[in-house]
Image 1 (cartoon, each protein chain N blue to C red):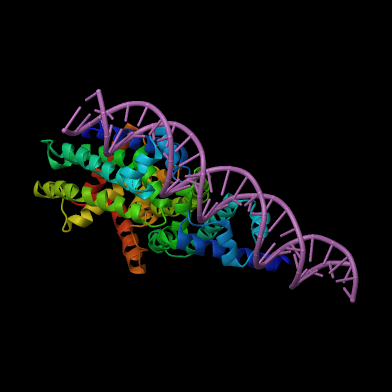
Image 2 (tube, chains in turn orange, brown, green, yellow):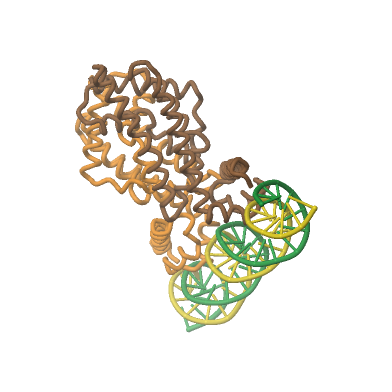
Length: 198
Length: 198
DNA sequence: CCAAAAGCGTAATGTTCGTTACGGTTGCCC
DNA sequence: GGGCAACCGTAACGAACATTACGCTTTTGG
């Protein structure tokens, strides 16, 4: 299979994995159901991903790369730091509470080894972190925020932005936030960040 | 079996369930492993709890009742509302990020039906909510906080207190917070709540 | 155009699990 | 103290699953 086709096929398989995962939960997602959904064979799944863990690790790392890409695109904006935060926030919220992220977090919660969770965290928050710190530092140098520790300021921002939304999503008690909800919540986070860090 | 003995036996069985759950994760927790750990028989487990879901539902509701009890005890304190918040916060954080709560949240995340999550949320946050609102309203009447919507103020407090700690715990990326960490985080939440709601 | 490799559909294998069943034992009630 | 219900330990049963195996077709590289 040519490299191009294979890449397409992988995307199809991973899309199928998400489809089953979102429909049946991690417990109800078997390799055979993914294969059937993707019209692929078990053999291919195992040859390409090694085992079930490997397939989900692949989902996680690819998803994290996409998140990072989206956020970096937002960073290219020319506006001042605070308005970057204003447009970064809804996007980040979208990526963290979307169906894919929720499905992956559920998988990580169900994973007895904890490796999926480690991968999510390492490639997720720890990939977003430098970008976010960069924006906060820019806001400080523009005189819009005052803080000593960027790490702490970032934690505060993330607490205000995300709060317990994600855990409520993961245990199935919170529907996916609408666009307007995400935007008002992100605006609230920036507003309160200014209240606190002046 | 006398009622008294039976109650003791139930506690033993549920303790065994937590032990296996915390050690092996939800996926690795079978009814038979719980029975063996508790030196009970499968028959008893099924007679008492109906099925696996029933057992975990029982864990969730009992845990929620204990949480509520702990918090109500804190409420009896005579101090002003803000210092009640100061002692309520660490306790709540402890209860939400402790091993038991984490294990139950993982189980809820893995549960395909979503019923466990619904039970956790209904008996958890929605049981804590009235108590917390009561404290916040008292703080307002004492002139220490200013807000219109108690629901919104509570959401803000919980975001500041819990943030994304719980989800990070659940995916295994965050160790259980120490006492001093919980206390300083709860203090931070109160401090910033005052920064925002003045 | 042809061999070799890759992929598909299906089935086999070995294990684990939820749930049920059963004979032996224990403790309770009268 | 005797009968009875509950409980224990163990095993049995059917289903589902991860993983492997195997013919068959398609694609690829030369």
